[in-house]
Image (cartoon, rainbow, N blue to C red; front, side):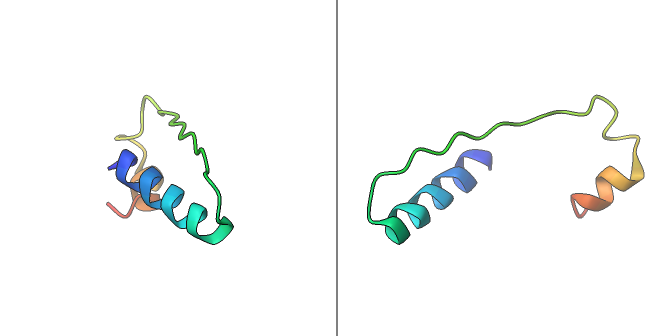
Length: 45
């Protein structure tokens, strides 16, 4: 899922700019994300 989002963003940026683009995805994990209701709401779950 993350790879697909990064690939789609890169392709769109390359088409927009007319040049090769490098995009680096970073993920930060909250150890208690499942216990925090607002975190799940932000994800649409």
